[in-house]
Image 1 (tube, one colour):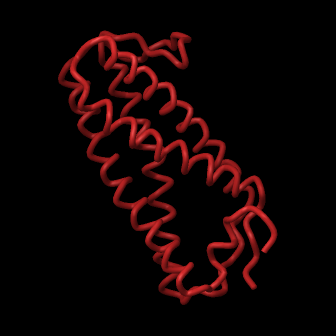
Image 2 (cartoon, rainbow, N blue to C red):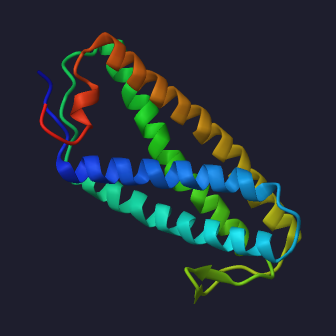
Length: 174
């Protein structure tokens, strides 16, 4: 049987999963809203939870640096390399996607608020830079969506194979 992840690792994984999937759904929904107060409110919520996600991913990375994941003895060498590459790319995107969104906001005329608390901005109103970082944020968000779909497909594959991989990240006794 494979060794399991720690409760902290599981908790951070599932908290991030819910938060990121929620942010993606919210981002897709709000992008279709017409300009106005509702859209401004929706963007404010998205920014706050995006900053929270960025903070949590740094906590998760810190945890990961000090706590190596348990080896998965059920994977072949190539599967291990592919899984490691996918996980590393997930971490990169979990930093860069909200980072690009946050950078974009720094080049708008609007204040940057974290759940209603104004945060100092490092930029100035510049539509070209805002567009560049906003477009990058959206493109990389779609890349993240594709990688999440691949991650879920791999989880389903492991469930079908009944190789015990899924139980490593699920809470409870197994």
